[in-house]
Length: 146
Image: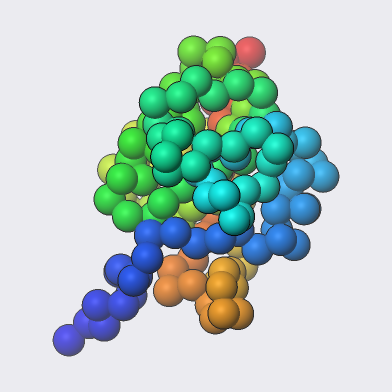
């Protein structure tokens, strides 16, 4: 029997490791974190669960580490459409590398900048995630709008 923990977790939230965020921020210079909590936000401007980032307008340079449950489709769609609609300059997504999913094919595969992370990220308690991760960059350049 397969271990149920391979496909689910006790929480859909995985706080971004500081080293990874700093590396990405040095490259992209983020201005908005739409999937934050008050305790773990990465940018001065952020949306918490109370603000509901899915219904807010995203602007600037966005870093997104979305909830990893079934709702991830909506977050990836919002990221992609925010760039397509020119609401924001770019969205950089830290997501599970689930290349077999509908959301990955519907949106992520349209990016020319998908970075697969070697090994498993250690999120909290310094324990490795139960899944591989990747970075997907949505921008006019990476999705062929320019």
